Length: 176
Image 1 (cartoon, rainbow, N blue to C red):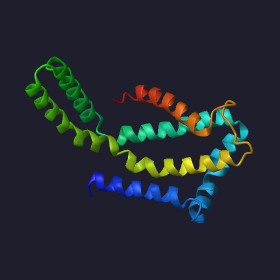
Image 2 (cartoon, one colour; image 1 turned 180 degrees about the vertical axis):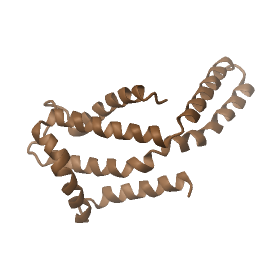
Image 3 (tube, rainbow, N blue to C red; image 1 turned 30 degrees about the horizontal axis):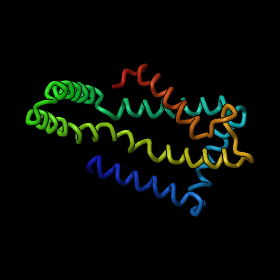
Image 4 (cartoon, helix red, strand yellow; image 1 turned 90 degrees about the vertical axis):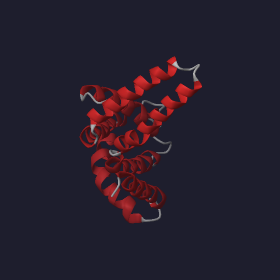
């Protein structure tokens, strides 16, 4: 089965989870059964540090998934060639014919790059949507909703911490 078809199936499953979260109790209940005593316990101890720990854990798992499911050498080569093409395109801004030729070459890289970079999504999309739905339930159970460091919603806190950890882990694992 092609990578694109698998990604489409995984995305349909994630949309199904998101849509049926509240109307199909087994989805929500089974996720809460697993995450309440684990991630919930960490957040109950200290929401700020708990969010940092959970974001770091999820990010390292996603980074490791990327490291071991993507042909990083091929991806590096593709990015290097794309960079060279971009530099050539800058040289030929005033030559529309040459520029069009270079743009066609650049478009040839898109399907390969897409296929390589989307492969980890097959493994991480469903767990991430389950975590996000659980985070929403966990943080909205508080009245008023719990804030990380007093002002971040859980989504902003997760996004900021995961970006920071992603940069760190990608450098540590020498990912492109």
